[in-house]
Image 1: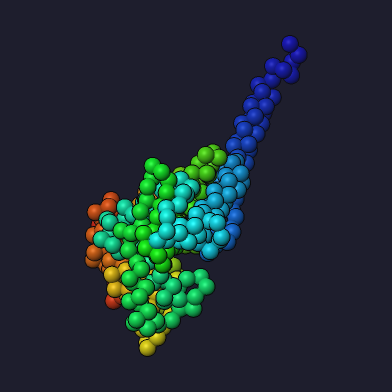
Image 2: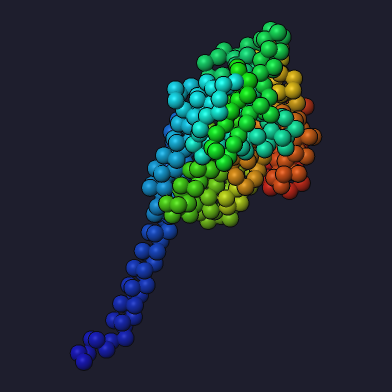
Length: 343
Ligand code: AMP
Ligand code: MG
């Protein structure tokens, strides 16, 4: 063997170079995994932003947006021929055959109408319209007569869902369904499933700040830190920072998303079907739970029920919740994981 091949110094240097190269490759991969792929798009009436990490991020995000667009296509009541359009058009006439995703969503809405004691009611659409909170409307104080007339057309028990036949039916003419309180959460779950299926291991799906779900853990941490925008700001950015475990979701309903003031009072877009008036005992209600569809519909239901009943509804459902009451106090379920709570 030639003398230099036997040199220990040389082999030592080669060894060190190999180790350094391996470390370089490893670090480059780590930083690629930590560098997020981000995309935002206007969807279901709000900005949805997805942040994903890892080599499959871009493809996963594209597929996630496609899945969300599908939900938007089904649930838009204004688009002629959409599932919701046909359901509403045929109110009081006949059942209509719908996509299995729409049926699932409507069946879930029926279940939670009952479990929330009627607080959550997707047949609230005539009231939403009477108050001008529909996308074409101008929010304003309606005449008491108009509220009574709209209230007579609301009733979750008259939404009939036949899961086997995949049909749904609104029993009375003039009734209509509005999925504004739940479609975004459902879409976020569809995005979550698409990201997972594409092989993405870490991502944050943010539906306009009001419906969020996380996939896996963030880079270099166990939990995701989600800031809840302060609904009255007062110079503070966040009302609280919630900690989410892999797969968890947070849904938020608040009175600053759509509202108007009249006679010194604030009227917001979440309506108590029992009174026909906007619910006003809470400023903000956030619910943390397993899926985005659940936390979206529960945050609306809890907002209507008010602080004490709402927290109890969340707790009894196996979710955690935080409420910012009209008296400007923060209350939460005992198991909620949060930081920096400042009313
Ligand atoms: P969210 O921001 O998720 O609480 O949803 C609020 C939207 O749901 C409103 O803009 C209405 O379109 C609709 N909505 C209002 N009140 C109710 C209610 N009591 N049950 C179900 N949906 C409602
Ligand atoms: Mg909701």
